[in-house]
Image (cartoon, rainbow, N blue to C red; front, side, top):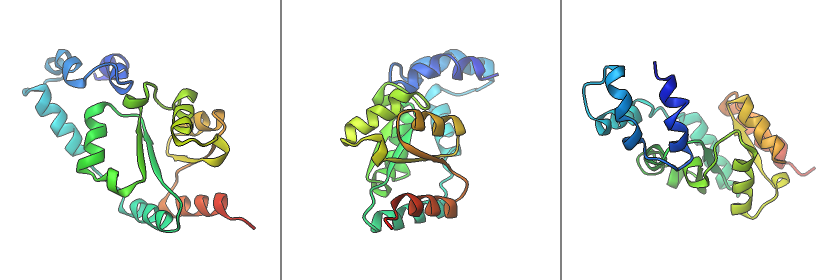
Length: 166
């Protein structure tokens, strides 16, 4: 039911080319949503607000050890803002990279190259962890080290493995 939206106009939203509140209303009636697009987006954001405290704990430990941690995510502007402010990602991470600002989404190689450029780093200096295999492959294609997320403990082990200097 939602495929036409997510495979159509929503792509322009995550690329920063359209506002979800402008493209969403055409779909809401067919989805049976009785309210406004603004109400729909507010509900959508609140429902998808399920932080993993164990992962945040690992990220805090990694940052305390002196290793910066960033978010690299495919998001439209309103969700990106929600993550940054309401979920406090702007305080929990050293920086946030969203597709709506970069103009390209994961797993596109250009997404990763844009981030590396903004960080002034080569891919061989960056480790990307993601739960989606295609995104991991996209990062590797851009020259990054990348692993598929399995758990908070796995995240910690991946970071240790890539940062250990024996």
